[in-house]
Length: 262
Image (cartoon, rainbow, N blue to C red; front, side, top):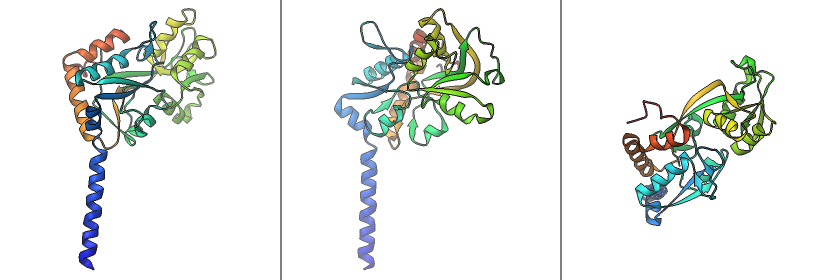
């Protein structure tokens, strides 16, 4: 009886280990397929957007293209929003995320991150004519935010600030609200804040209050150590050779932080 129980336990352990090994082979599946599916938001210029020829472009787009080229893979973009980026990899609709994905402790509980490949300055930006130099100055003002972003989470948790938030489904809708006059303040990246004035020169926005700075990394579902290791090596190599910095500077107008550059 004891021997049978021991054999049963060993068999169960073996099956569990085999299942775990199978789940940790996403990299092998990608390389065998010769294609990588990357979740990227194409409505957050200049990180992701559609150009006049209806082709994807932007810093995240070119980062994804460089990765696929270096690995010798066909690239398939999985269009996403801030709120659907993580579910896309959790449900196997995408292999990885390259879409202004900030590294946060909350997200690290549900997905894994590569080494950071870029950075994001998170701010509350308002019309230049709005007087706002501190959080106290923002009391009573409605701040537009894209649902599911780090800005949404951070400002929601700042209950002591008594902030009024207007949530939009994605960054494109939020920017449209600012351009059309529906919102005089937005919580987003400093880059997106500057883009509002490009789209509507009569309504120039500028950063008013800093929220925080975030590292941007490639997101992968939990339990894929081989894929993370390969991504880390790729990021490190392309920071050292300057390619990732060149992409960032091309679209954002500034270099990556000095501590990230090789």
